[in-house]
Image (cartoon, rainbow, N blue to C red; front, side, top):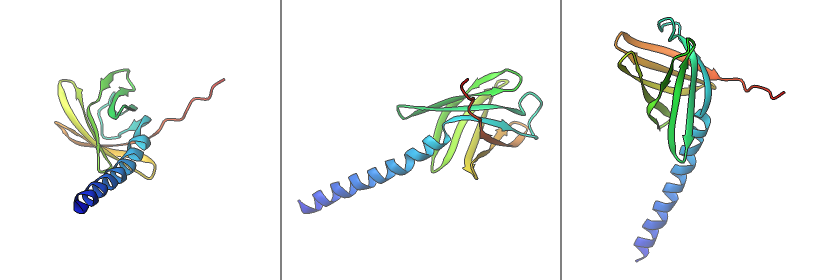
Length: 128
């Protein structure tokens, strides 16, 4: 009986630690990011990444500078790595990114090869 109680307490303690360490990553990564990539084709080389988290479910979209909006699919954070997929010109493009030095840095794996990108938090607009 004592072993069972100890096992339950250890399990609860471990899950509490996991939840408190996983939550800040989601909170840190959600919001609006302005990205650019010198390696991406024109029209896809800059824009905004918007990442949302509601009731534990992550979602988002990418707004390219030319006006195209693309929803993010299968948005997840695993061990500090953000992963998602977007569909561009009928191709599913897997993307991985991490926060490094306050910036979102990642790679999009396109049919033409890997395209690195970097994003900074969008400046919040001041209310007038």
